Length: 156
Image 1 (spheres, rainbow, N blue to C red):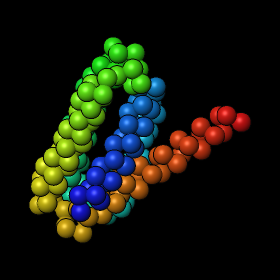
Image 2 (tube, rainbow, N blue to C red):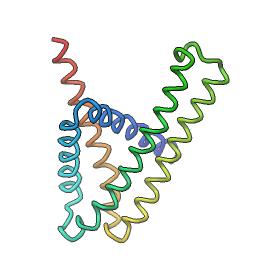
Image 3 (cartoon, rainbow, N blue to C red):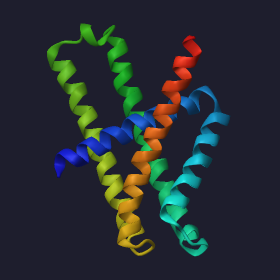
Image 4 (cartoon, one colour):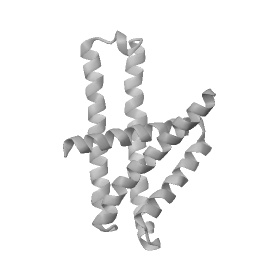
């Protein structure tokens, strides 16, 4: 169970990282991705207008918290690495410390997800909650595939 959760969080983290990169490069692209995600999740969950009205504020807060973790924590780790030149130039102790900070960040993502799903439990059916996990994974996979296709076509 822990392996599956860690795998899910890793996939989510990678997908969200790509989305955050798109946000920095182009706000329009980020908004487009956000709109696509809203449509994708709404369709997958078959949200009624009433459920959507309760669902989206909770889910948006969850994503806002994740962005906050990502932007502050990942940036601080990157700054630490830059201070030392590169990853290869870090001492073993420093590299382990920074690696542990990534694990702590993963724990924060998991806790944030638990809190979100506790809040969503009265709003969604258990089946919709489960579907939400898969919708997030599938959406992130779609974004990654599209980015990879665009990257390949840019090289040609």
